[in-house]
Length: 378
Image 1 (cartoon, rainbow, N blue to C red):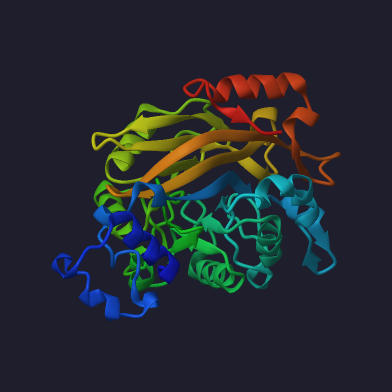
Image 2: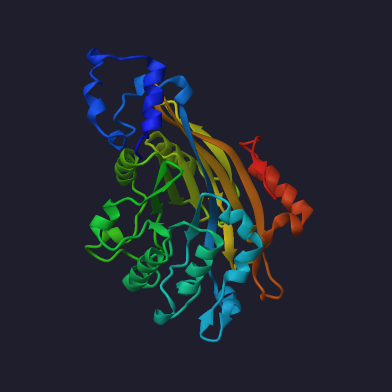
């Protein structure tokens, strides 16, 4: 972003006349728009000209479309999932960036829509997620390879075509190396995703890029690359044990490893139930945020705990001062939700508080286990 002439004159006024000895006199011959943020040493930025950039990020858990759900969305030969997202849309689209876990591969109807244990969802699901405010999706999970290479090709292409960033599954080694980055309000965010496995389905020979598997060396290398190209790194991990309300020791150790190696925000998936968030203070003085499991956001799974999910909220602040840029994560919050239906029809995501005060209060208490300051937006 170019620095305006007005900004430059303000700097000169604040630091006084530098004179030719300062070495800046020769630079005055350049047009004002040739000065970038890095053209002026940060040491000469007056304190009153310190700048702050802010971004709000929201994250939802598993979008896992079972037959009960897609049949409810079916209208003739097409599908309409938008009514399922509509009641909660205001909580999704208000964030600058919203990320979701796309667990059932978006392979499209042409290869056949399918349910557990081998999922494939229609493209209309992606359209509904886009309309509801989703900006990025994680594709690395235990169902990524359910319907083979064609489904991955279709999904990667469709997410790209509708303007949603995807991570964790790629069509080439070069595409995998080009870590996706989104920029909002002067803050750049990179996205990485990895899964513990793919339900025993092997990755096709010679195509390891089709799905990112959890490998500490790979994660470490990718985090280093992401940090060099963005302000904030958002890491999605498909890990843990299904239906367990608390993270395993392995989850906590992997989250700390990721945080120590540069992950700023860690989003967990796979347990299909909510697990509490926490702060991780790193050896280099940073503070990372982990949400061990965001649960199910929209699925056909049964049981109260598996129908409770929600939206995690976090604010990111970037400060540019004379000491250089710094990142701070602030104001963690959560919106509890519930997958409601009437006899397995009319599926929709509603606020949990409108379903049961008891379930809502229990959920809040559970999520506040390690984060008593967690705010709830309802």
